[in-house]
Length: 479
Image (cartoon, rainbow, N blue to C red; front, side):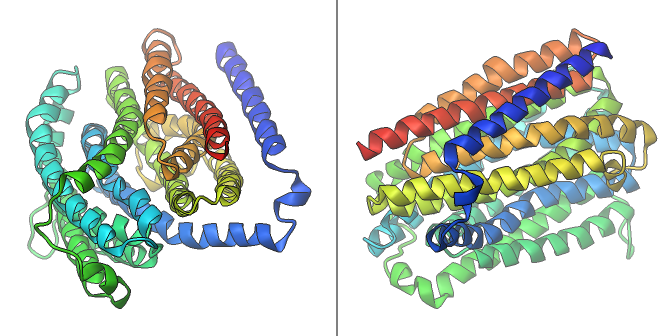
């Protein structure tokens, strides 16, 4: 217990110094909102980011809803199975999301210059994502199940997780097609439609998941398979709706008149892959580290693994706030970079950092204040609630750094800088965070708390290194 208190004190000191550093770097409190010009940057960023945040939350809410429904209606073993399946599946899924994301900065940089080129980028992105989703399905089917079976997990958990993982892997295809048209629209600054589709998709997902898991209207109880089937139906509907919106909406007609389904060109395809592949690796390194943490939690015990899933679900929701703002930063910085307006690049970067620090401080206070009550939203198992409550206290620190590092990634992507940030992600998570999580989790008495301490240190490392990279890049670009 003395070691935990000592470590927490160190962590608090680091956070305090980190925040003071950022406050000194960006601006004083008197200039932060001190002029109409500055206010316009904040307002335009928030207006663009808001719908993206809600849309991004839609992806996490599918998992959150799955966790809540399974935790309340199916029990602890199915809840641990959902945690295991998500940890393995997310590594595969973020590869696809990364490739889809390669379209957004290219559209943002070219939207005002060449509409025909944007349409060609969309066509190539669509086929890249379809091919990628098929490859990812087979990766899940053959690879992820194998990893799950050979990672010393509870056999009962593995048995419950397999059918759920299979259905989730099928849903990759509709989700990837949805993301193709979503990223295209967001690159042009249209974010509300994807938000609306995500909201309605999640309403459908909740209704279907409850029906399938509990067994209503003559349908037999389906357990974890039920939430997987609900997610598949939800993502298929979202795919159809988003595709129809982009193809039919009036604003997109100047772009879509050049769209050809079978237009596949090496130049456009490579330009997407050159951005999408490093972004995919960044996601893999980060999510892979968290998946590794879930596997470490499984080695400690099923209670710890279920608790890890509960706390990670809340942390993932706050992360999506940062992810949405990061996407907005990419679009704003990308537009400015394409127009060679370096003052706007600096201002949008500064504004994005300010907003995320404020937002994550607010959520940190919520986590710290209600850590004993929030886990009850996910499960009624008192053992899981007790452990998850401890993890949420650590998450209050954890997600502060998570938000800052994702903004760094977004700003750098807007300037087309993706390779060095990928290396930074690998170093921070796989050479620093995960080894410390393994040591503290399995080699000390800290257990699952130690795993989360390790993840926090990894995120701290990433946020600092990415900020340094941003400073160096903006100096080089403006020179």
